[in-house]
Image (cartoon, helix red, strand yellow):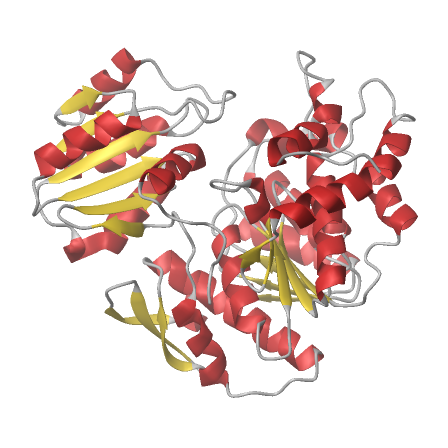
Length: 450
């Protein structure tokens, strides 16, 4: 077993198979992604070796929040809970957690080294256009860690799509579907129905599916797959979602029968919907585990949750909020969720890559801002940002006072100067810029709750 000396070295190995395709055109997921190597790896290594309940989460928006909330709700004295999410903010270790804690570095390096011989034997038999999925290796890493830690239930977030995602190899008896919208048209196919077909691929035979409200084509695809798998499907209606009662310092107070009133340290109506889905899921899994408990006590666990970078407040004087909005709709949700918490002047700092809806984000935030500052991050060399001239022109077209300051520290310094001590800064953009600001603010990633 060849040991790894660092996280960077281990992650370089994880992506080595995919990197051999660099420069080659990659086809859409239904022709280019194949979970078969991961399936063989899991069978070869006997993963998972311990029976447990699995929940798999798919959708276009809110997958990570729903995964974290469901895991927090399921954890209780004597019951350990695992979670697998993507992407991460600061460290790849954030993707694999038990009881909200990231996998420690020694375990991360040890388990990947343990996976290495079997992985490379399987990879050696792959064709020239085949590769070993990094997602599959992270799934195998998580399953081994969950086995070692005695995890009773695991909540797994699908990366993209579902039908051809390695995470869908988990034997989940429960599937959760957050809102499905148009996304990744090249990878998943044009049209909402085709995207929903990919998402529905996580549904297992004889299982239960719970979905948030969806557009008609999405519901049709979920129904079709549920019927094919002889699974039960429940699509929640708007009337069945948790209702906001009041804003709190960290988020909002919600009401949902039979859970009563509870505090959620996340802002926005979309998070109230995600909390509803998580509560329904956790109650179902707890029942399958033979656990009966007070619904209000279960919901109260959400008050201790921290989900970094989701409209999170990082500072005062001026108030600093950060959010991963990279689409116009999510940017509008961020403004709506902040509501009266926004004190003028409002300075908006944006770092949205050129493959995201940067024009929509600018359209949503520019008219509400007193200043728009565009910046970038070198953290992920794959990311590309739109030309500064285009960004400045788009901002001016929506009536904003604009500036382009590539370096984050300088951009925040300008925003603080223009906001003053009594104003507000809203930073929105890619996960890489959120990681930059987290580190700049001295925030840690190891724990999501105590």
